[in-house]
Image 1 (tube, one colour):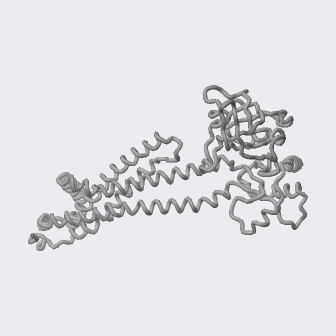
Image 2 (spheres, rainbow, N blue to C red):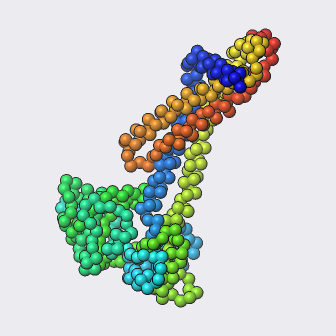
Image 3 (cartoon, rainbow, N blue to C red):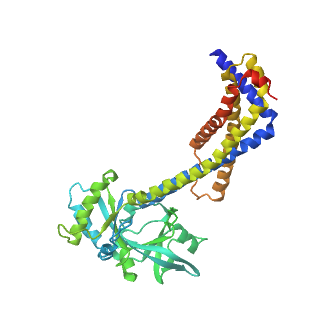
Length: 416
């Protein structure tokens, strides 16, 4: 054991002596590993960021909310059957809430009607177009986990009376009134006056497709006075126990069938959607992007490994006489093997450390320049990158090191 430790220490010293003696060659050799580690680390960072952004987007939908809509979230083959379905009516929410109230130990908490459309909102000369405007009830607060930067949501009496009040997303509020609070100001939604009673705190975007900060929420009765609720209406139902989502969906399907007066054996003329449907569709895409990205970046690391193998073969050829001398003086094959293997691993570790520094610097630049961009640098990546560097050094250096350890000392001493 003591001899093995001595040989390892001596091999490490010889390897570092050779690296220092050939600084430029070692640096150029490590450059391939540096590029590979930077590529792999940045790709891992991007994949983690995509996953984080994906999870955050789904969280905005609510993992304890079911959506009753005309169309399912996902591809359909018999689209004509879905096209012929009756539209969702907001009054169905009251019927479902009565059924929930009369059902002992119901898994459902509340059904909330939501009807939406795009609108233009004005205040003086300021205007914002394509604002997603929804009409809903005061129970909307039970569905949304959003905080309020200012003000509040409309209350039950305002909702029931159809009072012309609204709550704005923070981007809309900032665009309409950038210098002072917009609370209690009157805004015009497609020409109709509404008093602002609240502003949502920043929530972010859903998969880059829709911003929750570009919306306005109105009492449904007020919404119905000016806009149609026949199209783009849906019901959102909060579930008491999200671990029993399948049972809750079955209960909700029965309640909706009762509300619509469907007979036994009739096919459901509505769809019940949840965030898992989106996850099921996007997970394969996310995994495909991750696989393709890591494969492509792995190629750069493979090229770096070939460079290290090549330079290690050159080093073995240059030091053939040295190897012969050491073996003639009693050096074991293991000692020669360790010498060249440690040299290859050391070059890879240097490349790994430099690559991690470069990758983290680029990550810091992206984070400071685009703080909302979904990137996440994890300590796990440091460990993985160092392990990849060590494995790369072992794999690329083993063949030359093995060849060096198998040299005949007589032939090696005669090598010119």
